[in-house]
Image (cartoon, rainbow, N blue to C red; front, side, top):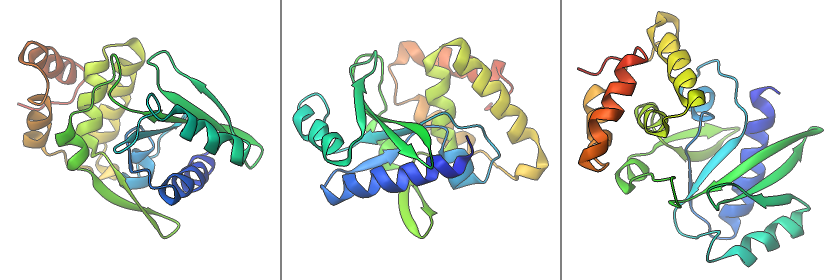
Length: 194
């Protein structure tokens, strides 16, 4: 699937959520092609909810799914997701929040950048935040993600300049006992911050 179907899913689901007063920030890899112009294989759309919860407002979110004929379910972390058909492809849209192992500090959400999709403005986390979140994930998939991203950042054609101070600022939002591990993971994957 190309990035286009994910952009359309973002426009569709994002438009509905906004129309219902739900605030969100794009937090997954979709920010790479949409906000930074990086050629990246995207697998889903990750939206971090800022003013509603799928846990406490489950009926609200289930009602939206029924109204628009979207399938929905719950992931291993307790968050809800929608499955939306776009151009004959099923696109998963995760509705994320700080539940169980998922923790995105408010400082990262509040420092979001703005990008446009077909003239519609969205907020998304910065690439520095995505790096920190993936390093904290500590999975094989996250490690591979960071290695590929390090290659893209090193490629002068991508023209990405990381704000190393911002990365440190984001790392420092996590408990002290996690910080060295996050820094180490980032640097061993080829993204040098010191």
